[in-house]
Length: 555
Ligand SMILES: *[C@@H]1O[C@H](CO)[C@@H](O)[C@H](O)[C@H]1NC(C)=O
Ligand SMILES: *[C@@H]1O[C@H](CO)[C@@H](O)[C@H](O)[C@H]1NC(C)=O
Ligand SMILES: *[C@@H]1O[C@H](CO)[C@@H](O)[C@H](O)[C@H]1NC(C)=O
Ligand SMILES: *[C@@H]1O[C@H](CO)[C@@H](O)[C@H](O)[C@H]1NC(C)=O
Ligand SMILES: *[C@@H]1O[C@H](CO)[C@@H](O)[C@H](O)[C@H]1NC(C)=O
Ligand SMILES: *[C@@H]1O[C@H](CO)[C@@H](O)[C@H](O)[C@H]1NC(C)=O
Ligand SMILES: *[C@@H]1O[C@H](CO)[C@@H](O)[C@H](O)[C@H]1NC(C)=O
Ligand SMILES: *[C@@H]1O[C@H](CO)[C@@H](O)[C@H](O)[C@H]1NC(C)=O
Image (cartoon, rainbow, N blue to C red; front, side, top):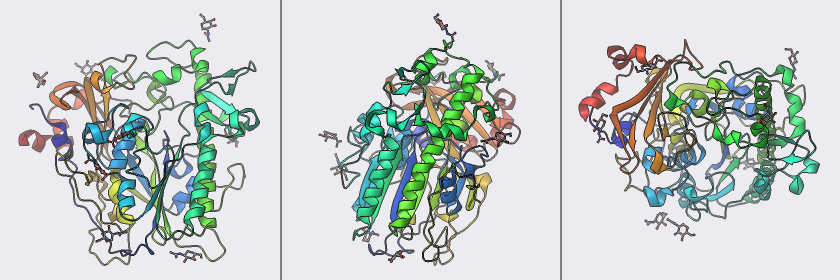
């Protein structure tokens, strides 16, 4: 196969049938327009009760799930914050935003692409950002893409600046910059935490919007469970250490190509990890400490859950639950010891698989009787807080890049057209598929073909590397240092990844220059530890991945 423009190669695979509801459902009357509350969590894998994790106490998110359409198989396009966020907020893949690192602004580097909030703003919405929505820094022009995306200046919690400072009291009584950082609220600067401040600010904004003539789009970006695990210490009690298991596969798999491994350099910078004298790049972390990391990740998730609970409860209190779509997702996952890794930065499911659910008033749930709440706050410490039945679920493979057409469609706005290939010159279009066909609107006039066939759906992810072997910058290579790109597809049956040569100056992938490959079967190897790539090459592989054939011939 000759050198391919990956844009063409990549995008030609994802075009499928799509349903556009247009404004047919809710009309074009701003008075009737639905508001949108988009909750974006940082580094949240599927460690949630509603995704079947029996250990995790996440009653408020589970309650949201019980009233939502939940996507069981949703995947991020690149498992690192800025590229993932810019991708789903613009509705374009990293190959189109040309952001694989943290160091450029798409409007300058790639094209003047519209964003989800910008589009809502241009359609009469008041758009607001609280916390970490766009990644801070140059990737959003040091302004969270203001003024284009937001009607009012984005809010950042003041206590955010302490996240990486010495605020964790260690056993020696001194303050350290640790990975594991359960805090006494009375003992920390400002007496508060970023996510608590963000919740308060979001509630203040909701209260203001209660009487607004215009609909609103409010994005709330929570910081936890991103490292450091800095959370109110009582949440540790939900997870006694003796009940914490190790990852099911805590070893680096024998058949893992070195290029696929990420050496999790960032946690090694924390003082408590430095004290462990770990060897680079493979570790391992002592098992007692592995349990502690897992315990603190889970505690951070439960703390996050309480913040989501307070926010949704306020939505109810302000009588906005009957007029507000709630979308909940995360930028990517995190490996908690699986494959001997402790970070995102890979193409494995633990890093790319994300929660995704949508609550749509009267569509995914009936409204409660007068005087009853849809989202009453649930205390995770209350022993009566039992696991809630999930609502409707979709098993088809879906992608975060689909948020743009899906949210606009659910809100009754005109769904932006599909992007041509390439689309650098087109300001408004989207690469993802609308997920509207999965919402079974009974009263819909349009004829939608409701054919669910999980075997037809594919989710794409990718990850760049600076070298074939793990080195200091393997987790987060700068654009100019990228030498290999791992393109990965996930179907309901398998994950298939090829690591190919990549030219960062021309943004070209060379599919004739294969450095390594991975193939994992979901049924026989759910944790992705047995690489079948070498066994499957040739005819077998091609029959497994039929799209390789026509694409090769077409180029
Ligand atoms: C209303 O209709 C106009 C004109 O067709 C369109 O440009 C706009 O996006 C619509 N706005 C909403 C809120 O649906
Ligand atoms: C980019 O898009 C924004 C929002 O539509 C617009 O205000 C701006 O003028 C555009 N910039 C360029 C260089 O086209
Ligand atoms: C980025 O921000 C700077 C400073 O606010 C501004 O001058 C510049 O126009 C912005 N870039 C774009 C592409 O809007
Ligand atoms: C810990 O595990 C034991 C034994 O499985 C169980 O009885 C107990 O309820 C667990 N504790 C918590 C807090 O989950
Ligand atoms: C697959 O083949 C390559 C090249 O011969 C080899 O380096 C690698 O170790 C093999 N991987 C597995 C899992 O057998
Ligand atoms: C790490 O190395 C330092 C200096 O060599 C030593 O004092 C310390 O005991 C070691 N810690 C562990 C946990 O091995
Ligand atoms: C939502 O409920 C409030 C209070 O019950 C009511 O005033 C309002 O009209 C309702 N909005 C919609 C869109 O049903
Ligand atoms: C692509 O890779 C092949 C195999 O390594 C090599 O022969 C070819 O020169 C490469 N093409 C470019 C444009 O780098």
